[in-house]
Amino acid sequence: MIGKRLNRRRLVQGGAGLATAAAASSTFAVPMINAQEKAPILVWTTHTNEDLDAIQKIVDEFNAQSDTVEATLERVPGEETDATQLITAVRGGTGPDVYMLDRFTVAERAANGLLQDLTQLLEDKDFNPDLTQTYIEFAAQEAMYQGSPYALPFDADARALYVNLDLMEEAGVDVSIFDPANGPTTWDALKEAAAMVNVESASGDIFEQAGFVPWFNQGWHYTYGFSWGADFFDEENCEVTPNSEEMIAAAQWVYDYSAEFGPERLAAFVQMNPGAPPTESPWIQRRLGAVITGDWQIAQNANYIPDTNYAITYIPVPEEGMESATWAGGWSWVIPQGAKQPEAAAEFLIYAAGEPGQRTYTVDTTHLPTVSALMEEDIFTEEHSFFATELLPVAHSRPPLPVGAKYWDDLTAAWELIYLNEQEPAEALEEAKNNTMTLLSPLCPIN
Image 1 (cartoon, helix red, strand yellow):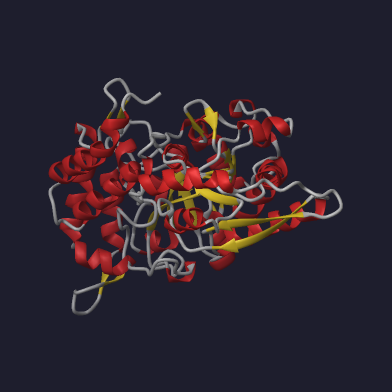
Image 2 (cartoon, rainbow, N blue to C red):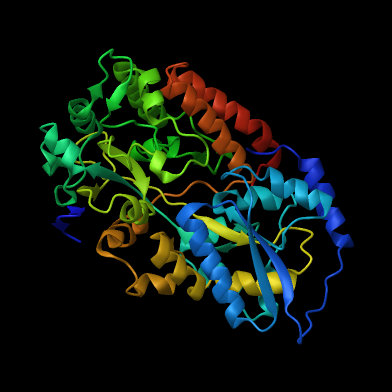
């Protein structure tokens, strides 16, 4: 087991506005970089907490070594699929030179004309625009659109099951089921263990302590779908498939779990405000027995609960003997249309998304790198190595579609209806498919 005492290793529907933004970008002159004076670039990120600190460190290190460019970092509000502020800024001519974009949305933002094709900018700086030569395969593919690079991959991640061994053992759970040496446990075995950890209030209206909340943190639709063997996109027929038999079965398990323990009580237990600090998490408060989350949680555990006895193991499986499934995502660096200093921005991208920037980010945040060469370096802790060596090589990834953000948002809306027991899984997932296909169908076939 890997742990403290264990020693085993939304979519914004503004296509027309984006097209206008793309056209308007041609009015921006590209300033020459004065060799005697650093060209200023503005870098935007939505990240917070440890991630933001690490990004600031990368910016500082870049500035220290660059004779030609001076980057300034600003944090702006937003989430994975929310590019509203960027779109508004580009349309108004006030956008940044560099933006940090969730990589699975690159194809959609490129299709909408929000991003610059990086091919010539990279070639001018002797950087190979064939991203597969530098980055791991799935990350490189996510950063491309119609064969051209529109982003440079930054970090990667993978999901696993974290278990508070103290809470489990105090409840009488046999924690050997969470030993990765024994392979993944089953979802039903996890539910049984979680029920033993649950502690209700005197009135029974709320949980003071809970064993597991299926949708909390990284308990997404993709997490369960991949576990049950779902495939989210039919490439041959150019069709999203969130309503497959496997995905419906996965969603049914979550629906039934919520029904058994009470969706309102579970939701109230994990309720957190958007952008809330990690200290508001029931996991950090040591009131949650198990949670599905990513490799970045290692750094948060070290910062906030260093003495907690916890384990990291595989995501459960529907039936004993099945292979565990996880999925990986990550962020990227892009140059928006209208950037005033694209050449200087490209210099920053190559540094931040290259070995120097990713090495800093990997060590400071326990995210995974996407530069292939860094996977061979000794930069992983024992816990982190589990993600780097056991999970990332076999991780699934979300389909990089020109409606990727739309698909995510439609799935997420359906997922909430399912885990709150407000709609049956098959019906909710069918609606998610139809909603996404309204935008995908006119774009088919996808080149």
